[in-house]
Image (cartoon, rainbow, N blue to C red; front, side, top):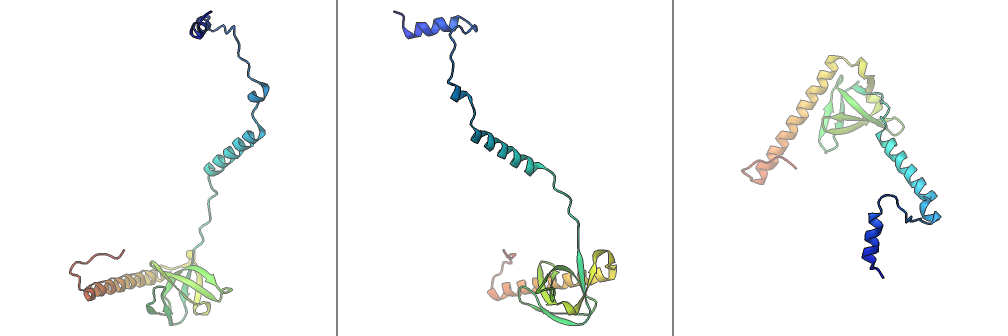
Length: 162
């Protein structure tokens, strides 16, 4: 009687002819429908994520104040916007009776009746200059406010806000 090791060795020495064939049951050779569906779902997700997105149109609107108007910025400071000041439009609210405008990193809301909405192509360099000037004033006021808060806190070392 030969040991199982010797039988294994003899079988391996017979070569690639594979005289002793191993046959798996028919059920084990078939892939189930669930696996096929899962594979198709995975491929659809991968292809859907890598497909290039359609190019979006660039719509930019600006609003120019038609009269001097007081506004409250999102962080709470009160400003007066003068006739002719121009700001980018973020969105309309309350069935377009109010408009949300952007000033640097903040925003504010005003009545739509106080502004005239302009498309980007119709904005003049002078109108853009008013926006840049307002941004500079806003940033300067924020810097002064921050420095005064630091001085009141009695800290000798000035660190930027987090």
